[in-house]
Length: 358
Image 1 (cartoon, helix red, strand yellow):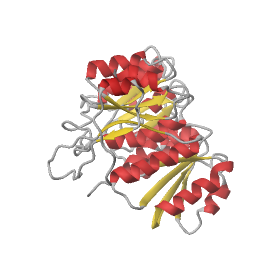
Image 2 (cartoon, rainbow, N blue to C red; image 1 turned 45 degrees about the vertical axis):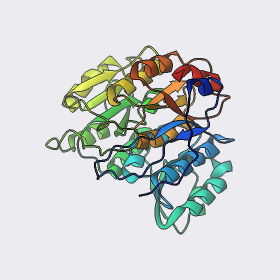
Image 3 (cartoon, rainbow, N blue to C red; image 1 turned 135 degrees about the vertical axis):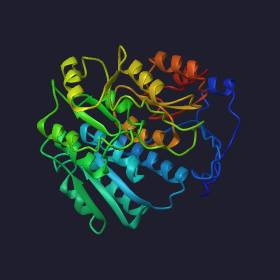
Image 4 (cartoon, rainbow, N blue to C red; image 1 turned 90 degrees about the vertical axis):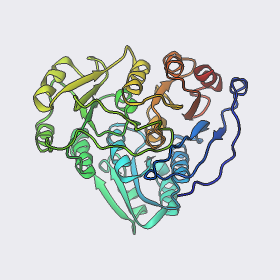
């Protein structure tokens, strides 16, 4: 598979300090099964005039870098509420699909993008009920294979998405259903996400977990892809429920109850969302040459970008304005030199990116 040629250049620390973050370095032939080692190194920024346009820009980059002339699968979720879209990140990995977000005012624009860039037999997953993604959006996609995954609430919608992925065993990310940062920081990991609240799983969630195949391998071997030095992520074989966030996000009571549902439970949490995103990166990514940077105070850019970061083999680290200390510390300790940033400079200034990898 051949990648489209891109402008290439040598990035120096001096250039980065001068805020030249529009350079893509390295585009090579990619074949995950020939045993060759690839590097795709980025110092680039992907963004549009709105969150919806940014999502489409990310989807376009995903198509270019994966060599897809047309998409066989697309996922559409609300751009105004986070739970359904967070549920879809693992589905996106399984189906090789970007996530697009929408609301009523953007439906036509998003539908046009899907029609222009999808194969005739493409599947479009709409995640969430008509209160999240309108029936009008569905009608704008008539003629395509449209499948809506929705439940009575965010928890049952989450389960509908997990069932669609066909997941039978392995690790699950456990994250707070009522806020986005922890699940968002795990969106690049490429594991199924279960959204929780309160002190125990719902009856439906317990039934789903009980249906999983406990005899299977802990997780699949991930073939080499861009930015992977060996095989990434390397997962801890003794834990199959990984809680993201501190006890303020997922309670100690929930953690205790999970031990009755899963073989073992592990928690990754920092003092805030920035440090938690670093904890996730440290757990699942080994010596990345590039990190994906997303705005930590809202979800749309990072959520859509998490799918692309997973494809690159990059961890997703949060920053906001001049608040980038955790990202800088991670970049220094991991030896990371380059960034791919989701969102415009009003959210994460070029000066902050230079500070992260400078």
